[in-house]
Image (cartoon, rainbow, N blue to C red; front, side, top):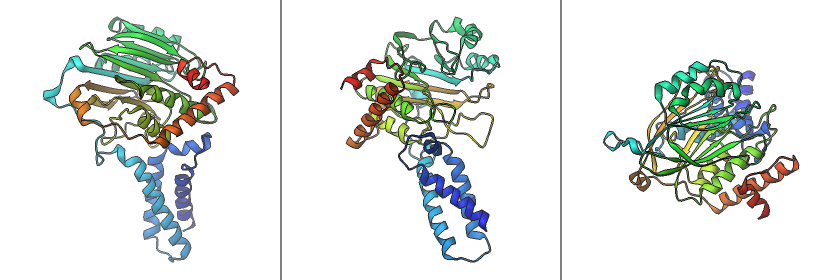
Amino acid sequence: MIWIEILAGLVIWLSFWSLIPRDEWWFRGADFPRLQILVLGVIAFLLLIFWQGEWNLQREIILVLLIAALAFQLKMVLPYTFIWKKQVAQVRTEQLDLNKQISVIVSNVLTPNDQYQLLIAEIEKYQPDLVLTLETDQTWQKQLAVIEKDYPYRVPVPLDNLYGMHLYSKLKLVDTDVKFILSDEIPSIHTTVILRSGQPVQLYCLHPKPPSPTEAKDSTLRDAELLIVGDQIKDLDESCIVMGDLNDVAWSRTTRLFQRISGLLDPRVGRKYVNTFHADYKFLRWSLDHIFHSTDFALVQMQRLPHIGSDHFPVYVTLQTGRIFEAIQEELEQTDADEQEAQDAIQEGIEKAEREEKIVTDEIAQDYKRG
């Protein structure tokens, strides 16, 4: 019986530990394995219920706390299942219009991975309009040169620090800028994509550092970078897509705040998990790679692609824009408390960057600093 109570206690502790509003990695790490915690909690619940033993006060208290923990975990993960209301509409067959569509592959390749042909094969198979690769260095840039004939517009940022990125596009790119928002080590790509219809779409490609013992000791800079971009997007009256490896899960406090601040939608809500990391461990996976978009986009298709030798699976998504979708899809409601929380997180991130003598080169961050 004692080991059942230990299992239940672990689930209870991890569930409520994640509610503590701290940025250190040992707090934020509990955001990631919610599905795994939920599975362990269900096992513990069944064992507590059916174990042939005395029902004493301790067992009853543990059961009540476990039910509360399970309810909390379900609240966090159920939106990413088919039983939830879809946040993004599905484009019907009669609505399809290739001139208004944009297809993308987002792939964290893992810099030491040398199975280049596996990703190239997926790109050649799906022929997306955009390919965003993350953790790509000079070697990966050289290997991916074979796709350049199909992608005349390119934004190469090869780095050997695990934060290089490359954007390949069949569609015209204008006003392209590589920014280092809060760190001179972490690039992001900001550009405008011109659809075949001539419509411009603002595109943001991000890959902030994760909170972990080997990377960032806390999530402060990651959260601030994401919210700085979200705060910029909220004032835009234009089509917009944010994509990349955000090193955060869809159900985290920061990602949900980003959605409310930016007004962007998540096509996974009401459909399915698209768990992209870790590709090598089936029972230790969660969603780190994301594609968010403005309310004028609806979903044509979305799928996780096969293993390419990386610790991440690639993601393939096709979206279509149209006023009809904007009319039926609503932004998440933002409160004054959300705005204050976002501004506080942004300011904290800027101050931390300054303390660590990082170079804050992005104009948005400089505006916050002066304000």
